[in-house]
Image (cartoon, rainbow over all chains, first blue to last red; front, side, top):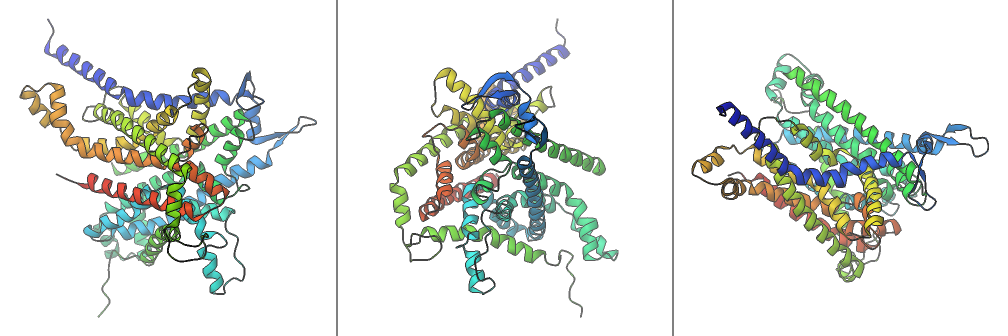
Length: 306
Length: 266
């Protein structure tokens, strides 16, 4: 005869099984239309490019070699691929600078929002959320119209007589930077604000009671307490920035490529799918490293609080 | 008397916040204003006119892309919301069980991988299937959109479920409701605001997508965003401003609805 314990365990087993059935549609969809194909990218990165795109089923490490190196066409010697290196470097640099800019603007903004009265806070939050959910392409296009030679920035500068000829911002790295900082700013403000909202201002008061200056309070009390939000925001900005496609294609023109444009090129005119695949895996590795840094920091944060 | 000392004040922060909000909205406002420009340029003002809205609404390519966008977003958001609701029911209100962490990881995966990488992966995978089956319809785009919409639909549904305890469902069971009746009459009505919020988020996310669509679409399958990207690359006309304005208006309406639905407490 089954004991009460066995019956309970059987019920638990049944519950877990049902929970698997329930989650099956989501799991299968994500597996077939998101996760699974990533494995194919890895396989493709070790194949030989076909003459008209696609691949030949022949093993070759060449794609991975050419991620970083160039093979001399005469004597087969390898040298660092200047073009690829400069695109790598530009992508990483622009992603990091974007993160710093959004933090420099987003941190004070989140602080401002969190120090408003309960009632108006929702309104400020709403004002940040609107751009967050509006189309990224449209927001990039809006930036394009502002910074181009005939745009409002240059027109105002010329009217004021500060410059005599329009400054060329569009199709430069600065344009990409402005565009990315603009489109990813809400991604920084929202998590920082979420941390800031929970901030206990009695601690700030205690700091002032102990003769701390405003700067000391900011650096020693506020910043450490909202650090999880700052880290989350930095990750949320850095990840889409390193793989940004729309912003560099619209604002960077053809010359100022970022990694995603280089990848696209391999699947288009470049007709080198293995190289495109190897570059994609590389982008993913960079993102994974960033996520690991985040997980470690978030982990240690909890240990300290706990 | 000394000026009162506010512990909440930090020098310069309010100024930066003001600059931030102005900077966030200024480009969008300029874009909208020039959509109503009579002159065929986006740099000089030629008077108020609705002609760009008129020409956009008569442009066959725009109509075609808009209808396709809505079709994909409606189907993908619905499928994603159904899958996400089921997944949320399966992953909340339970003690940890083997595979739970795996499920979280799977559901959040589309948020972790850069879009460009997913785009490339799907391009390769779907091009194989296309050769194999000969099918090249909208199914691929719908599948891709459904997958990346699931985590967005999941978030508000899960948040809602976590605030509901099981006592009402237990009470229903005590009153001889079958599990299905308990779900249909108790869980679903309570969960409804979360589901609606998830559906709206998924719809907006699908409607906005550029990168994955750009890689997955076959010839002649432009959605509104990919059509606009193509146009912007070729040079800009106020017609794009008009389309953007209409698009923005729609997003703002949906987001406002979302805000009220997800904030509503009962």
